[in-house]
Length: 204
Image (tube, rainbow, N blue to C red; front, side, top):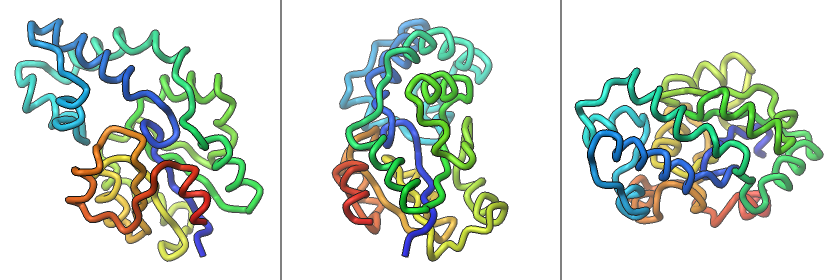
């Protein structure tokens, strides 16, 4: 039985793909590059996102990218909404006694603004944010909170999330509401593919 749920934020619970794309394209334009289409972005974007920029914008520094992304994305925090079924899923975990944690690369300040406005921060026992490589954190999270990997799943929308789950020895669940298209996800051979977080709730 799954008693512990670790969740990604962007593309899994929060509908922020278009906002991230717009902010990213503004960075590209700032460096004199052509913006990416949605399909181009989904094809090339990956985590850790430093590798994405290294490939497509090698002249950019980490400090410069952080400053620009903060500037271009900040205004979107007031408009991002939860994906279909996200609030119901969090409430389901709470009422069924499942422990919920967040593991996401989202900037901490952005998560705090979004989660406070949406009223969902209370559902997470701990929110691990601004994590560049989730694979480096998953085992420590399991150990710190004494989570049995056999009773834990990690739900995310990207190949990196599948890899993270496997690194921690927990059940990997991929949802189709986010950044990676199903073609990319299938290459990683996830144990479970769900249409969205509402479908994950039905599976539980």
